[in-house]
Length: 609
Image (cartoon, rainbow, N blue to C red; front, side):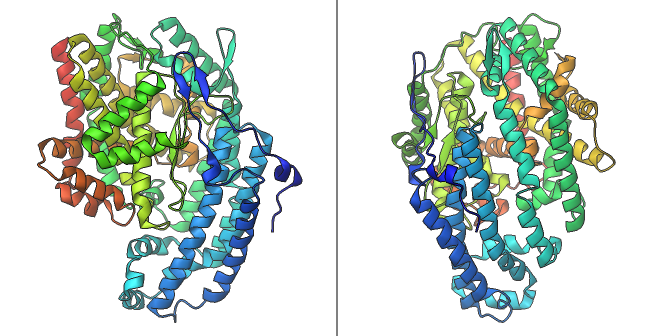
């Protein structure tokens, strides 16, 4: 057993308090006590010891016995495994959320690492289970599935068995699991804590990445330029470290893919997402083939609006010259998003309201806090938490709508249990992007002023470009980087060149890129945390565009079918979930249909010009 150090046992970090902002109002913070009261909570230690004991018993009861076990016995083993998964997930959710709230506190970082190490020890006791499930003879497996109690878990079992051709020996799998704490996991932690500790000089202050990046959408070009130059300079000063981290993790993935017999770098992620390689290829091709009709066309239009022949890269997210960007207080943001959710479905609104009625959202920016935004599902026996860095911009309102969509999805899918609540990545962004669309459409419908309507429509186009075009460009960047890493280690300038090329190709000639922009790849956490995750955003956006078109033309019952889709969690694949709506992501024309909405919005903007 790995003990918790005395310093961690006795240390309870000061709980963040709600921030009273003169412009934004009361910004709430989350309360993690629904998981544990603190790092020194006696229940946490009791739960860890219980899990260690139960995992050892589980191994003794079932290891080496699944081949001869009846279906009822295997069903009992799956239920026990699910209980262990929920318990371990609760502990690691608490540790991860605590760390996300302050990545630069050494005591919290120590606690987070200790929990990962103890969790790995527990997981090593149960690792045999999925390995043995994969070794079951197919005919015998199908025979055992006739037992109703086991058939209930068929979606999870099918997902587990999809990895059987990529499974290594039991000894190697055990080694890789234990080694991940000091291997890949350590490099990810180094990235997170380094990024959280960086400070960016700006007008005599030292800003966090979340705050300085928000300056890139300021109305004042001088502010945008200074922020952009500061980001480029600080990332450049640290680019050797970020390059080392990226090279190491890319090589680690290449080795794993080779041993597990995945032909392409993206294939393992596609298997995780239960989506075929050719479906993702079709998505990427449709988006990239349409670059000139979408991003290139829009940014040329924006340059014209801003009185420039070419936009500087720090103008990409700039408000339009006619925009009067006013801060949206937190209370108004909450009201706008919930109103949109309730207008679609009272049930959806009621679930969304839970996040505001309880301390489930961490809203304000603060030093050491994880930048960006996320929704963490935790485990079905608890509830999700949302992290934001809310600064009152319209995009922040849309981010709230997005993350709340994730949270609602996670709450509804919780009824599937710990093994099947998780949604495949192909549909993980559906509820979030749909929530954004609901909010945008409601606000747009309420807007009667032509100038403000144009501004809102342009903002939505930019969000869609960021979600679809930019994320597929990120996907192409990752693909090129991982392919190049197979040949040799990459220098910072090698990665920078790949980065600049995909930016130029995807966003077009209307944007000019200064030299320091070659470092901007290094702050994007998805490349480190979850390689090849990014295409999910484009998948979700295009899917939602098609789904929303069905909604607009649907008769009664769409909301109920939509909520049923969310409740299904990971119990169904994308084909089965989309069938009630008459949609099929494997249809070659599907992505073109989704992208057509973006083109139509740009058409409307051109007509307004």
